[in-house]
Image (cartoon, rainbow, N blue to C red; front, side, top):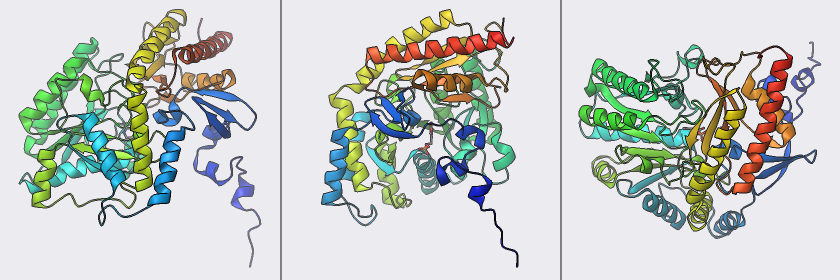
Length: 464
Ligand SMILES: Cc1ncc(COP(=O)(O)O)c(C=O)c1O
């Protein structure tokens, strides 16, 4: 018998060990190995310091090493580390859900905890389906969402995510929602102004509901402020006014996916800044655990939850839902957020950061747009400002700027959405504890990175 002599690790040595082998080789080149974190900075094993301009994955709201959060988790673990949410009650679950409900305000009195964003999104949609079924609306199953958008990476949420390239791989397996052109402010659908684009999207939503038959449509899911898939897109306000009107008219539930926007947009929910359009349910995650612990939440009105509880109950949960140690950590995260007024900081430093990024745009022709809300901002790169033409795939401007940024000491995150068809950008979403002078440091680092990138493009003849 012949025995294979080349092991898989010999065939493809991985610098980071087994963790690297699931990523594409291209994406693992130059990834720093982080060994330490402090405040809004992370440090690699070569002694380099990076300002974390994207809070890990728009998550680490309190930065690194927050003692209050870590102490709370340790104390909870020593007191009571685990019991199951369906067979026990516990105080950390009570404490966290009460805090979330209080911060969310009227209409969100009930909170169901889960282990992250995708799980929370699925819980939101499944809750609505179970409610619709229990209240005699049995044909309501269809979901509508935007193209582009992001709602998660499970087989359920992949289907609701707006990614033009997903269908080839996942089409035969996932159940796809009906996609509506997103009301992008910089690249409005229909080609007019941002407001006209918003009205165009809204009209398409209503037409899609009518085509599917409103009795078959369960919900519309939307990020009130876009995340990585649109580069912090903020739709014209008329979009939300129309959206609420359309959902009410057709009995379609409205879900706000605030996995990224909660707190970061400068209010506990971004929904609080859109009084004309109150969603029926909200899901959130990321900043709730602030990177210290996995945590997600579905926020729903008492009216619906209590009615469902009387009829059938919402019979789905996961093992780690409302894990006591995670709940204690998330309670401390929210207490820090409130007591240090980090929502106010997101608004104030966010406004300062935005002004400075706008000034950067004046000096760098490769910056086509600056947008976002609070500390959820983005800088879009273009080869030609007039036509808004993006750079080619070979240039991959946002990733080249990310790489230069590492040398400048700033951690960025690149996205070229659907091979540049929707453009490309760096999301600028630092921890909510960032100070004004640290925001200046970030802008100076980005300034030098974009300047270096521009010099490279001129040298290679890509731009004049
Ligand atoms: C808007 C939005 N929804 C859902 C998710 C999925 O969250 P998770 O990665 O925690 O599953 C994300 C993650 O980036 C997100 O930004």
